[in-house]
Length: 202
Image 1: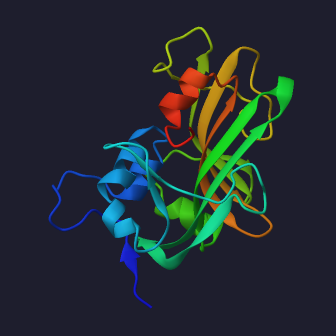
Image 2: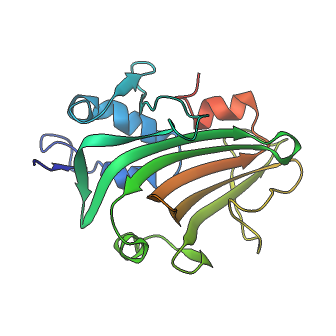
């Protein structure tokens, strides 16, 4: 079985980051990175183009738990990690808020993933089950480009964001059937904010 490394092609400029290192920032540049590498990625999964700058990995149905993930035809390698699929979930929980998750399914032990991504500052939420990094927060009255570091003591996917706020963070989670490295936006998510952060959602 061939292995596709998640680095930019050899002919690309040397200062470009690998796909995973762009992804963990949890910002819209990830979708530009997919576009820039769509020709290589299309060999392993379904890539959809948004416009001449943006593209995304398409799952069957992000609101259906049985169809909101896919496995690549060939696993990807990033350093010592095996990236075997993609996850994309969306939930509207009414007054609690909207929750959007997107990222990768990784075929490694959660501690190994955390150690390989040791350039991130991980916060232990549940030992060997759930870690978070890069937590951000914004008020709904702020410009959609504005995010602040979230230094709150209660942060994470299993908590409810404060009223009139949106949270964004990177999650490393060991589930029953898969280990996920995913970004999350949760809370009050306006259509304008969603369009900026998730241009793959039309």
